[in-house]
Image (cartoon, each protein chain N blue to C red):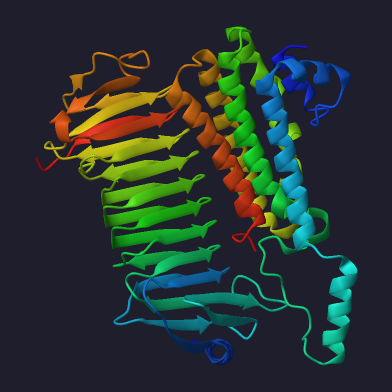
Amino acid sequence: MSGHTIQLATISAVLAGTIMSGTLLAETHKEYRFNVGLRAGVSVNNPYGSVSVKPSTGNIVVISAILSSDKVEVDNALVGNRVEIQSHLLPGADAQSGRVDYEILAPADASITLHSSNGSLRAEKLHGDVSLEGAAATVDVRDISNAHVHIKTLNGPVTLSNVQDGHIEIDSLSGNVTLRSVNGPLVQVVSTSGGISYVGDFGDHGDYRFTSHSGDIDAVVPGSTSADVSARSVRGEVHDDIPLQPKQHTSFVLKEGVALWGTMGRAAISSTVVLRSFSGKIHLRKRASE
Amino acid sequence: MTCVELQESLVENESGSSAEQRAHLKNCSECAKLVAELLVIACSAGDLRAAHEPHPRVWKSIEDSLKREGLIRPQRRSLSLLPSLGSQWSWARWMVPAAALLLVSLGIYLRQHSQTTDTGAQNVVNAPAVVSDAAVAGLNDDDLLQEVGLQSPALQEQYADNLRHVNQYIQDAKNIVAADPNDEEARRTLMEAYEQKAMLFELALDRSLQ
């Protein structure tokens, strides 16, 4: 290595170090604590960055925020029994300098409302209502029970895992929606062009409705599942690997390969499942391990 | 004037005040109810706008006072999704939900009413095609895309793509309902398609775009 090269490398390293240290110095960590009552509310509006909510011990809300720069502030307030957090962009802030990442601990029975444009939104181990909204935000909800879960995204992917007895409504324009071990009285997914994937047993006495205009719908269920299943794709295909008892009366014409309607398992304890697409493929499959 | 003709005429005159419209409304309780509901929605939207948008002089006066007191800093970036939609698009804050409601209400009404009138299946097919969604609700794809492009050019393509898909979704759903007006699932799907479009506007105008 020539002397000139070594000099260049040294200067580059110094410059990189300076930039890195500047970045690190600009990043700040803040923490806020609020004492709340039963069934409190927590609302976070964060244009850039992630928000993660986990259960706290006791009736306390702890907000940990990492601010990327001094171009953004955290406005916080306790209004009644509701904690309101807002990432406040100052002039000149952009997606990088305006980023705030939140880690939130909240009582498990709290109602959570999160908004982010492009960060990830995550809620876990809660049993209060959860409402998440974001354009390109990645949404991850897991280990939730007895709660309303409402999600709206433009193109961010949505994943729900282990959500029991939920009242679930997901609307996504083009993001893919994945549900694993999700059940409840209402499980509804509507998408324009995103795919919908369900792996679970459709619970019992629930209303499951998955609609995508052009996305594929894939449902994988154990052989023991009981459900009344109706599936129709206007211009796509419908496949099922599970024998269904055909219905005597149907409200639409059953054409092989594009529609099916029947009962799997024991009808007496079954849920109602409606799978509908215009140009996507619908596939109802039995879990491979059985 | 038939029920379908009246619905079409509402695009031009939503108050139902023309002589022809009044003559029809006298004898048709269903259409009279529709016009009344449309007026309520339109008036509510206006009231909301007025209630939440004080005169600019009020804001100016408050701003001047706060500046004199040294209580305000340089103007912060708005928290809204498309902040500079401000003057030109401020009405949209209330018009979008109102328009979405109007779209869904009219969609439901057209479907239900077309079945109950004696105009036959042909009218069911024609009515929705004639009444333009944009004309009825004041929603204009081009305006939205233009504003998104001004604020976040990188997102314009995404929004254009999603708009194209959701418009196709609505059109396909309309066709299915037209082919079988008794298909309840199809009618529900049409509503969902409208809701998807309303959500797209909501996301653009509300919080998620910066």
